[in-house]
Image 1 (cartoon, helix red, strand yellow):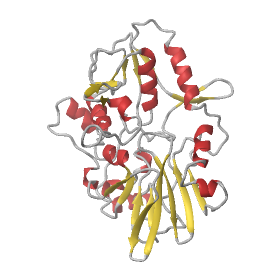
Image 2 (cartoon, one colour):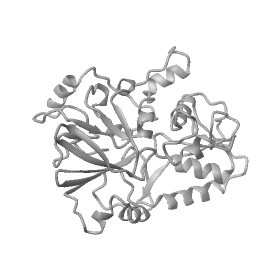
Image 3 (cartoon, one colour):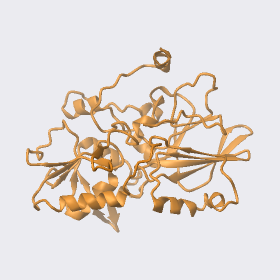
Image 4 (cartoon, helix red, strand yellow):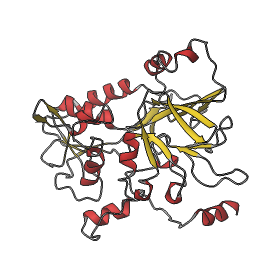
Length: 346
């Protein structure tokens, strides 16, 4: 769960990952969205200004997000059309490329430079290096700071002046979901254990991997490659991940894109690991969509984040995972922030 309140003290005219009105502060001149996990989208429902800067992948996914009841009812034929929850933001979202120092004018005479850097989290997730008026901060968002990632960050061409001591960051805004000492395995270690476990089953076993939020893309790629099977996803997930292709259908906005949804080799289309066909060994379709291939013999794979010293498994229940972007959960919807502010003041 995000613990960041949106305010960057060094740059009070910008807001990051929190979009509700904050009493005592004037409205921001620019907003930044690090990724699309739901705990970082607070207030986006009713935001009408200013521009929101993010990665191209985040923009494309955000504009296609649907709440669970709406997408389920559409899939079951109870709704005639899709209800895209954030489509009203189309003209506010401003996608930026990664790894480039980009100038942004907040207002005449008030300029900053922003660099988007991959956060090693989910597709489209980025950090923000913000510089201006002799100050500099790094907003990490939900990074997964594995050793290889940190080492690469020190060599990043835009970060190199800071990692070498030539420049100094005034502040680093960190994700503080876990402030207590908890040992997490690396992605590689987790994937190795998963592949070892699935290899113990007969070759005709059908698996279902519970990808309840964004961030399991590398798991899909690893499972598909190892078991030599594509992965069935529901129509909603298929539409989301297909959107990572550029308008031409060739250019991708994220490095995982070709492996997930396919690519062109010369003039020959090549499939990615995701498919809408149910005639495969691996499924990651949403519960409730009545997939014909799921039976009582299906082996369900449910992600965990780590184990305690005594070996007890700690399930992925939302910390850094987005609060269930792709899962069923009850929600209250409000028409405006004034109602929300009144509830928060109680």
